Structure formats: structure tokens, C-alpha cells
Image 1 (cartoon, rainbow, N blue to C red):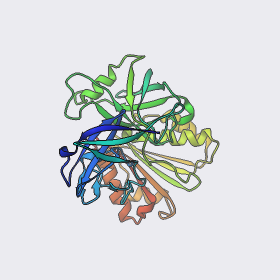
Image 2: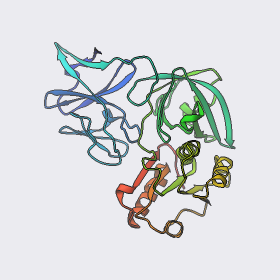
Image 3: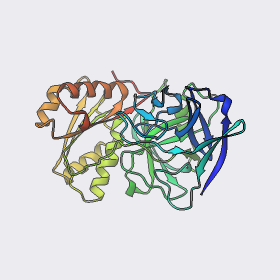
Image 4: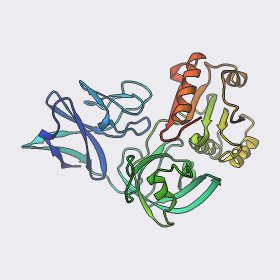
Length: 344
């Protein structure tokens, strides 16, 4: 069953343009392609960028964050770095209005394909001097894959230009029974969102969208090279703990670069390394960085391994350029960009 909901007036979206609308707690991107309207999920399947803010060329929209392209008439993904399409919704004109058909969401667990939900803050955990984890419990059963992310909505007074929503990796593995958000706080440069998050009391509720993202281990049996810059370690914690819990072999090399010797999750990672001989660990402390030489010395066959690079955007962009020059095929490289963090 579905429900027809008015989302806008047809005149508000001229040909060649798009806009975002909210219906039943979901963000929907609506586009006018030559006088015909099309509605798709607003969240890019790569890293959650707002497709409604992208450039529309014919029936193709380009994500404003990292350039993934989607066909707005079918939801199909047309280019990397996204690897999965987005949902589409029937839309029609009724008089002056645009109506979109939203499928009804039944009771049960919430996972990829469903709408919004609320999480309750259960605990806070200090990881390092400037990094804190926030542990949330879900009010309904929640399912996700290790490495995916959530879009959080945290209303607060006088928000800055990044407004009241953020995307954070789910740093916990699915078996742990909670979702964990781990983030770094800059002493003087934290956003209004992070300041509100830091002051959030235990028991407070926040809204999140469905789990999303394809930065996951699709072939855990193959050798992987996990490259983390700073807070980019969060998805790898979830992935490694998930493999360990499922008693699967860990065949991975983890290269972890940080500005200081205070590495997030270091005790957990070292404990995993002791249990899994196939997990090779290398730490890099600034000014020492991850170079072509350091990669070549620990990865003898670049074309056989699957590379996952996670961290601040400048860090990931630098690594993906380096790996491309070294001959790593595009099909064996996944990226997880953390917007809002710099890297020097």
C-alpha cells in the first residue's frame, strides 16, 4: 500500500530544475525533465550527499559532494564513486499540485529501504583527549552493514551554515546492540551541531534516517588494504569487529595515520591483531605519512588487493590519486570521505 502526499506546486519546479521535499519524514528530490516530473531518494548512496542540490543535465543529476551521477527517471547509478542506485517514487500532477506516492512502512525492524526513526543516547565514552563516542539505542530493531552511516538530525539554536544535520559512520558492529557515533571535537572550531551533540544529555532522542552507504566489505574472503586517516578509522572498527564476531578470517592490512600517537581504538585493534594473524597493522604518526613506498612495502600485489580509504576529504583525495598512479584499478578502490575535517 502507498499514500499520495502533496509535496509542492508544479509551478515551483520549472523544467531543468529540482528541489527537495519532505514527506512522512523522508527527504525526496523532485526534478522536472522536459515538463515531466520524477522523484527519487534525496540521499546519495555513496556518502549521503543531497541530490536535490546537484546539477541536472537532461535526466542525469550529479551529486554535489563527490560527483556520482544518477538517472532521475530510474534511480540507476551511472558513475562512481557511488555503486548503488537510489529509490524512486511515483509522482503525478493533480491540478496545480505535485503528489508523490510513499509506500507504507510496516512494523518490524528498520533497515535499508525504510524511513526515519529515533535513537536514544545511552552513554558517552571518551576515546582520546579530543575524541568522544556516543552510544545510542534504537526504539525499534535496526539492521545495517558494517561500514554504513546514518544521517542525524539535531535541532539546536542558532545553527551555523551547515544547519542541523550531519552524516556519521556507524562505528559499532551490528552484533553490539547499539549504534555508536565517534567524532573529534576541535577546541575552538567545532560546529554548532557538534557543540549541541557534546552537550546532549543521557536519555535524549535524536532523529536519524535509514542506514545507507556502500563502504562495506563485499568480499571479505579477498585480501583488503584498509587505509585510515585520523577519525577515518571508524568504519574499520565496525568491519573488523564484525568479521571477528562472525568467526571469519581477517585477511587485511591496516595502515592507520594520525597526527599524534593517541590513536582512536588502538587497544581494540591491537587485541584483534593478536587473535588474527592475518591482520597486519602499521601505525603512522605525523610528520611520517603513508607514501608510495610504505604501501608497496606491505602490499606486494597491488592488483589483487581491494583498497578501502577512509578519512578527511584531503587525505582520501591524496591517497586515491597516489593509488591510481601506482596502478590500483578503479574497480578495486573504495573511498569514504569525511567532510568537515582538514588534514595537514
